[in-house]
Length: 248
Image (cartoon, rainbow, N blue to C red; front, side, top):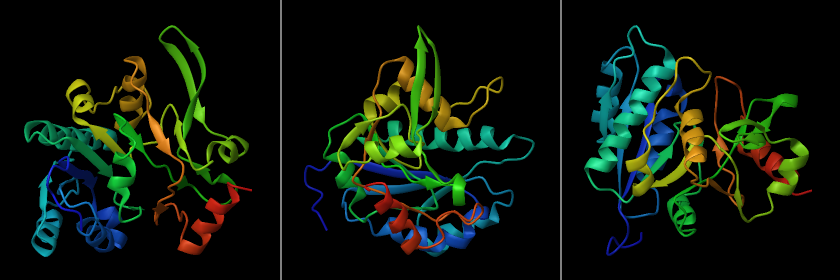
């Protein structure tokens, strides 16, 4: 383990829900054993029954709070969870917030790998969907005119060029594995606009773009996405094959 002396303080945070219970224990153990030594974990549950987070909190000895999802759209209570995490990071004077979604399994030294770049917003991307629909959670800008723009997912052919093992700029890579510095956390909130499509991560990247903060992606990293609901990347061997194919 690295020593805490002079290391930036990092808050590892994420909304959680019982729908990810199939990998929750494995994920929580992984999070507790990240190799960076100066971090705390803070999770916010949005499961309908608050007893779920209480059981996890007792079992894993972690700080876990709860947002009541009753009578709210999923994207509304998800934004509330993320905003609760952001506010804690700002209030407690953390240097960074590292958001890591419950079904994302990165290398043990992921925080160091991202922090070394010295960027305000930097993360790793991952595969979503399955079969012919499998794609990377990377979006690029297709067209810009003043403040109006169109973004879209990167194509497979573009992905092969994009993933060259270096730090690359992208419009968005989701918020599943992303390191955000304190100055950005003070400028932007996690929000949704009910008149537009999208979850909090979509609006976060939109707001970043509009105020001119660049989003970076470390293409040397490809976390395992264990998304059982979508049957996505069901095992490490399949994941490694997909990652290797990007470099062909």
